[in-house]
Image (tube, rainbow, N blue to C red; front, side, top):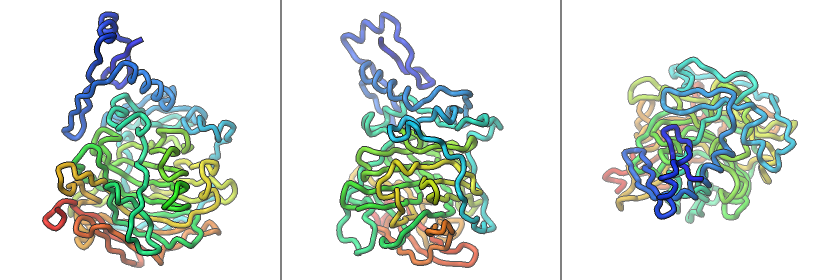
Length: 423
């Protein structure tokens, strides 16, 4: 059977005449994003492989919601979600709640961001979870079906300070981050993250701001990482909107893990938060500032790593079975920004980090993380007082940390990328 991509992103059966032509030729699929058009020859066989993969991750919905931004949100019964396809979770009993960490005080003068698909007032029914539907064109923007929904493997960066994290830099990734020491036992972290919509120069680049929960070795194949924040990624989402995202890996980004719910792993429990959905509204230069709060912590009884969003709304969790080192605890936390610098035209990318302005520009101009906290072995939150900062190229993106009574441990970060000092 042959198929063709229709406007909703599904594959429909081809007419017999077209089927006959496919015996001697392939057809063209046009992928557009960021004023980027790629005419790719895609065979019927490849499209069938893609559709089989999409059938695995796009579960039959109880109800479907069309978002104003074009997203399709499927309300899927919680027992039918992709996570439970994982071989280690076949008999998994969904945990509905966790021992909660205490709330932190919210700062004044800023506003919380929510999700765009809420605007029409429709909600997923109780007992279901909202999942952003993936389409054929989403997969075709990736390098391959295997690469769809995955980060590149971390490369080892040389000339690091002895206790600095080996973040990705050798394969075109650049950072401006704060981090804890690597010798302590950590059971979670929290931050409130300023939300912007940084422009992306090339479709396969991204800009993100996130929390990393880490354990294992940076120079081996056993790094465990749990990640959450917001990102702009035209390749993954097909647009330039900032979106709530999660990620996990238990083998240094090699074969395990993925973004959001694009593979089996993360168990979603809440019916109003769609991972991968656009965040709205976003901050504007010298205008209103919007931010999101993310808390990740290890449940002391069952060992699952929970995530909450906003005002302590439980989104879901990464089951302990997914990990090796993180099955016990984390050894390092990182907070901050990351971009991909592909040097597509022989120059440093103009993809922006954060607001696109350097840290010294301050509130309303530079992006920030505030109220950085860590979770200790007693499941209590405390301010992350002893942090270090790192930026590979401060002429492109930088970071400045501080402390105040209202914002606790905080930092401004970001930059424009390409400029006269960052050629």
